Image (tube, rainbow, N blue to C red; front, side):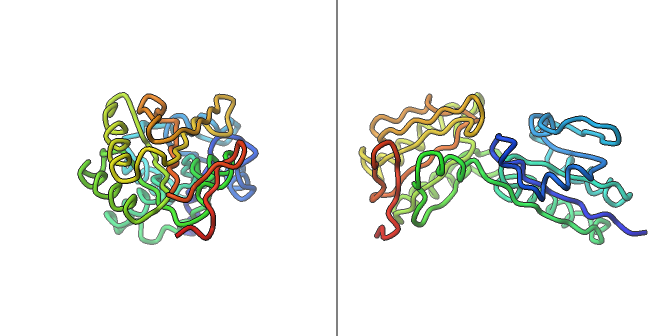
Length: 245
């Protein structure tokens, strides 16, 4: 039996115009779309398409379900927001394959998408114009002490930074701690950008210094960008020179 490739697709940051044509084509051909509830809600229902929406903390179960359907000949698309390889479902699917050799024959295609980090950077200018790193501030899958260590080392190395999952109802204190670490390592004048719901009607972007930054400025729909020591304002824009030291 010919096994249909399992597609893992990024839906971009929110604006439907930012979904790539490649992803749109895959969704048009799909018999099943699988993903976290709000991401599946972005896919219009149609005849012949089954939507499988699940909670955010069942990634491996979701990945296994997708692999089972693909192995049975269904045309499956696993959806993530942004890019599926950035803190999203692509890793979960490959983890499920590693744990279950019965899926080794399933072909997998990963279709990239525009991340919230890149969409936010484009909205405000070019704050990631030189070397940068991306850190997930959630400690659901790694200890908080690792997060703290990475924050300090990234700041000491002079990286601009992008933070995903900065603050949730169950983790209200961690962004405050992260900001304290950044103030210790970078000083009070470093620029920081809070970009919420970028490219959607709820978009809100603010640029402040670390001295002015407060944890309450972010929630789980916010991506936080921190400049390096050379990052500066030019009019209403923020950019990092390409020749930063």
